Length: 254
Image (cartoon, rainbow, N blue to C red; front, side):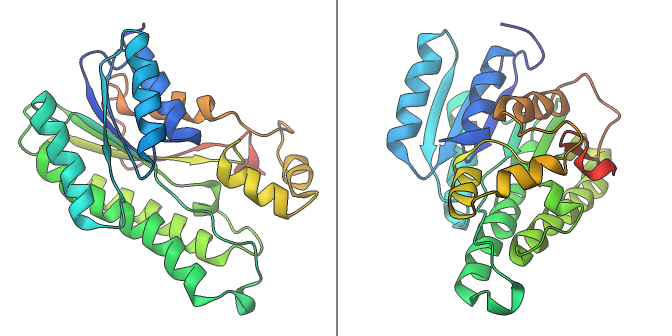
C-alpha cells in the first residue's frame, strides 16, 4: 500500500463497475478506507470481499444517487460507521443513446440528466454538510467527461449533463474554499467501461473513430482515471480547487 490517501475515509458512488470499481481498488491501495455506493448489491458485496481479502478497510451501501434519501443515507452510513467523511468521488453516471438531438426522446434526456446532474447535486449537498463538521481538510472529485469541455456529435443530453457537472464543481469549489473543502473534477476521455462497451457495441467503428481523434491513439483504462482522482483527493495538491482535469490522451488539446 502507498500513503497517498492514508487515513482518509472516502465515499465512492457508481462503485460497482468501471471507473468506480477501479477507484475502489486504487484508493484502497493508496491507504484509504472506502465506502462503496451503487445500485447493484451483488457486485458491491463481491468487491468489498475482494478488498478486505487484500487487507483494506471497506464497506458498502446500496444507493441510487437520483434519490435524495439514498444519497443522504450513504453519507450517514459513512459517518456512522467510520466517524467522519474526508473525501468523496461522485462517479455515478449514465451514457444514454447516441442519437441526433431532434430524434432524442424525452425519456433519454430525463434519465441522463437525472443521474449525471441531479445525482451529483444530491451527493454534493449531503457530502458537504458532513464535511463542514470535519475539522480536517476535505476534498471532493466529480466525474465529468471530455463531453463536459467540448461537443461530441449525437449525444446532446450527455454533453449538457457533463457541462453541468463542471458548473456544479466550480460553484461548490468557490463557495466552500474558505471552509476547507476542495472540489475538483476529472474529465475522462474514452475509457473502457460498461457504458463505452455498450456504445461501441451499438455503433460499429465508433471506438476506432474516437481513437483516431485522440493524440495517444487509444482508449484509457479505468485505473488511469482512478489514479488521477486519487491525486486530486489527496493532500498532495492543497492549493488546487475548482479545476477540471482532462484525462483524455490529449483529446481536448487539439
